[in-house]
Image (tube, rainbow, N blue to C red):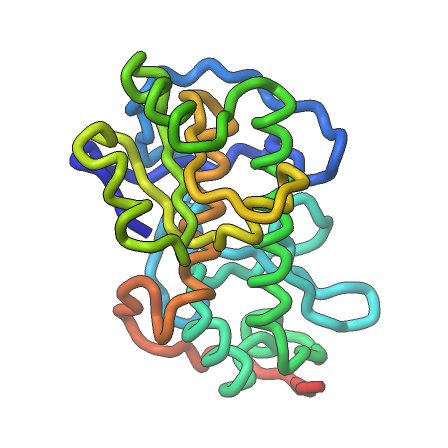
Length: 244
């Protein structure tokens, strides 16, 4: 994830629904206002307290299986981890979910992959919502036009784009946030096209939701920890934990 000069954290609003056909949230946020607000949560591996937009929530289902709650809507007590493949893998390997839940739980061994897949689906759903709401354009010329009009809060560039394609926008990007975590093929899925390299999103809650969720997805697509871990691993409590 690359930030412009006006960098800052971003909220992941609870009303940014992730399903096709879902009603888009209202867009009221002025450009550039990616303020770090909202409730904080504590990572049970690192003990770091962070905005929940930088974390992933988990719940224990009725069958005792740990489930990632990407949309943060499932009932039950939430267990929070920093949005990092390394940290989630550490929690699985050290059997820390059961200790955090103080219950016997079952943890899928592919939990980090599950989270990445769900975050990807959520990001593509949000791209589709923004497109249908007229809050997003794709293609170099359209993106350049919106940039010139000052209508852009977030630029999404394909992670596998060639250096020439990325450099084409050059200094026009200015203070906009730039995300480079989705591939051209993945972006194309949201437009029923083969490949998309450049996407621009207008200011508002959809831009904020996309910024937050592409940030979280980046934590599962980079090698190692995507964010500083700090603290130390927690060993409090006690439970039986089964990894499947």
